[in-house]
Image 1: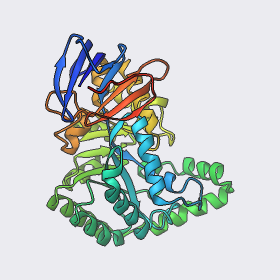
Image 2: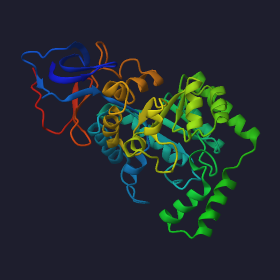
Image 3: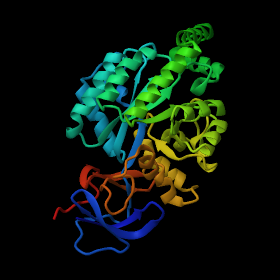
Image 4: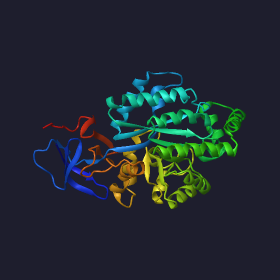
Length: 388
């Protein structure tokens, strides 16, 4: 099957007009010229590798679209699957937390999160996108180790990140900003919001020896079972050094330039959110992904909480990337594949999986058609594929 008349984004350049041949779900040939008798005329649109999202925490919102309004788990997973395919994402790591004392505690209980992970894995063969599991380990909840150990040993965890959402550091290092946010979002008085944060700090505080033991146990588990390990919300060079000592290879959402610079210097990969990059600012007042990109510190874009932002964010960054569109596309494809050890995908090269997204760059940009292993998993109907 030939896909013809497309701008083809290769890892290091863009072919202005060419064609791709797909055989048995793989990219079999790449031509820098158009071909005759193709099965699809791409009308000069852009074809990129399918996006690989290493951190998407949308699944809970699909299962519970409003507080305490629960939908069947299968329905929520299928809704998210379709949304991801329509966003040009062909491989998605569902970011799931075990933190029963958080504000989303009923959703992030040990039983509920485990059930989502098992359901996602059991449904895999019936879903459009290749779904993987990203466990977010809250280091202040050591009781989660037993269930995470079981999931890792059962080969149901593909990526693990070390999280600490205690107010006063990381993402929530600005206490006053957090108080103002609670007042606005929850309708609390200043005193109520301050008391809420003080309680959260107290609940999450752990002796240094206990934290050290938790971190050592988790990092050893990941090492033994070849699970990629990431840190989360790094804010200082000292924290980067600690994460390095644990075997972390990815710094997720660094919140300061200091942390991002130090991570890059030490060989870690910096991952930040597509919504942040698209908007040009972090919603919580932390490091801008666009600024990080301009400084040469951004390696990976993740959907975070809004998958439809992926393609528009990449097109936005392409305008300022020193390598143009090819450089920006790497943030959602080849760089992610390399960081997570996915050697069979992430770039348009012969012998790689035909995971592709055809994009119309007009306006903010939008996916027109998404293919996984050469099969159409999403189409808006504007291109016609003639099966041979």
